[in-house]
Length: 260
Image (cartoon, rainbow, N blue to C red; front, side, top):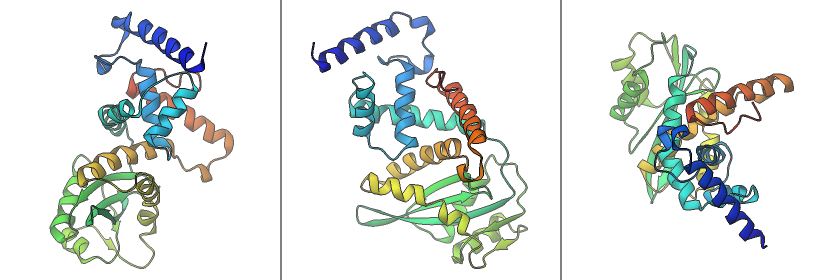
C-alpha cells in the first residue's frame, strides 16, 4: 500500500465515522464533511503560527489527514471569525491606560491604515482598517473602540499625530492625553506580529482582507501569547493548558483534550 493510499483510506474511515453520528455534531459545523476537531486544529495552526495555508495542509498530511489548502482557507474565513467573536465575549477587564497607534499598509499600490489600541499588558483591545488617518478616521476608530467597553479610561497614549487630539476633543474630552516621546512604544511594538504575517502573506489583497485577517489574528494573539518572557516555565504551561481548554469551549471541539 502506498503512503498516499493509506492516508486517503484513513481519512475515509474518519469521515464516515463522523458522519454516522450526526446527533453529536455541533450545529456550528452542520454541512461540513470533516470532523470539527480537524477544522478547529487547522484554524488554530494558521492564525497561531507564521505558516501559510499550504503549510497547514502539509502539517495535517503528516498527521494522516488529507485536506486541501483551499478548504483550510474557507475554514479560516468561516470559523476563524466565529471563534474570535466568542473569545472576545469571554475577555476579562482590560487596564485603564490605552495605547493607540496606526500602521501603514500598502495594498495594491495604495496606502491603508491599521488603527490599533492595546492596554498596558499589550493585549489588543480593538482594530480598524481604514483608507485615511484623518481626524474623521480617528473619531470613527474611537467610536468603535468605546463601543461595548465599560472600563473607565485613566489616560490614552498616542504619537503626535494631530488626528488623535481632534478625535479626543470630541470623544474623550476629560481623559488625559499622553503624547511624549516613547510613551507609545507599547502600541508600536504590537504591530510587529502583523508585519511578519503581512510579509508571509505577500501583502494584503484589500482593505477587507486586512480587516478580516487582523481582527481574528489579534484575538488569537491575545489568547495564545500570554507574555512568555514574564512567566516561569511551569506557570507558562499552566496558562497555555487553560487557554487551550478555552479554545475547545469556543470551538465546541476536543482538539486539545489530550494537552489540556
